[in-house]
Amino acid sequence: MSNTILAIDIGSMSIKAVIADIDETGEIKVLGHGVAKSEGVKKGIITNIDIASKSIRKAVNDARRIAGNNISSAIVSISSAYTKSTNSIGIINISQKDITIKEINRVMETALYNADIPKEYDVLHVLPFNFKVDDQTNIEDPYNMNASRMEVETHIIIAQKSSLSNLKKAIVSAGLDIESIVLDSYASALSTMSKDESALGVAVVDMGGQTSSISVFKNQSLRYNNFIPVGSNHITNDISIALHTPLNIAENLKRNHGDLVEINDDVLELPIIGDEENKNSIPLKVVQNVISSRVEETLLILAKFLDKSGLKDNIGAGIVLTGGMTQLKGMREFAQSIFPGYSVRIGLPQQLKGLFDNLKGPENSTVIGLLLYKAGNHTQYEVDNKKRLLHHKEENTGLRDTFEETGFVTSAKSSSDTIASDVSASSESSGNIVFSDLPGVEESRGDFLSKVKNWIKQLF
Image (tube, rainbow, N blue to C red; front, side, top):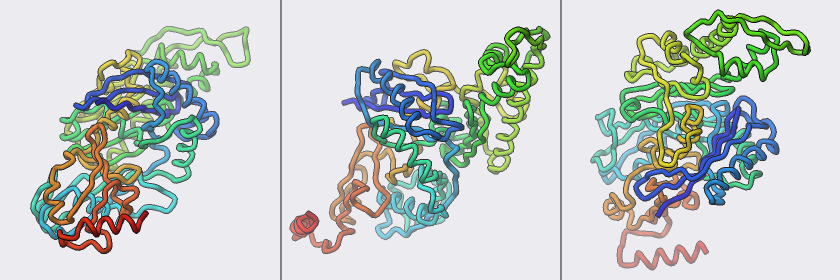
């Protein structure tokens, strides 16, 4: 049985909606898509909820019309402009010696508890990058291992509560429900980097319309992320200001004559702002210099972020460039000069079944990444924005060990075979009921069921 999903990328320049099916094997088939001009959004931040919701509704309605499906629950991207990140460590003792999902859940919860998170921020992602089991470090997967102690190092991405609330209001005003919220640069990386690149170490640079970001992965874990509020739209503004020409003319110059490698000596006749009769004669190389100056400045700042991460010597797979700005001619060669010693390539989103031609460009990396995230292509373990532990273990894997310890465990499994388990203590939000944690439940098997029934009656 397939699972239909709706992904919405709220970008600074456009809002994209894609509807797709995920089958039992995890294969994604795109059914429909819609694109709307991004209004009520500036530099990744929602500035007008009503206007933004109308743009979202338009993109979603177009996707619904093509797909023939009125799905209303969506996985949504959030701009890096809302977020910041921190690292934290969690340590637990293991009484029964075998590590199950319950212990991984608990150590992740401990890391989250130990994190220094400001009150005005909420958790977006908790991403482990190093497990330690007893005296052994760099454990890829601690599941089913025998140990008395487990430690995890995590990279935690947090978002402003007020900004999250505004995003949710815009989605709800568009008549939609939010299933998950995913960092845009994380989603872009999922759709453009390979597993080998993620394992060897790679920096994914996403250059959009009004923001640019960098995400560094090592051993298939997100280790560092940062952003700047600069994108391709700033190039358009630079051209318009420098040449005193209208914005639409500046945008056409950027798209049609933006070459970062080959310098052209042609002369262009450009209209002047406020003067409909006269035109300026501008050498094309002046336009190219304006463009290259802004691109160089942006890449140099991102290169400094890479230095700041302390991981520049750990990205054996080099640099992956994605996003709309990478469509400038000569971008790869130009970036190579900014990142000497690293291989640089342009990252296109993963090719999915039924993918429309106009979704195959680098500007669509985020929305395709959202589909992949929902299909289970996230990190091996992760706590999402609803504080659910996402993982890929089978529903009843390790159930016998857990039963012996707790007496009874109920687990929930999503249609895409990604299992979500709440890391919070609240059984209402977790979807996991561990009866050994409840008052009045003893280890005795004889009266176990009657005690459970009595406890349920007390609740209801």
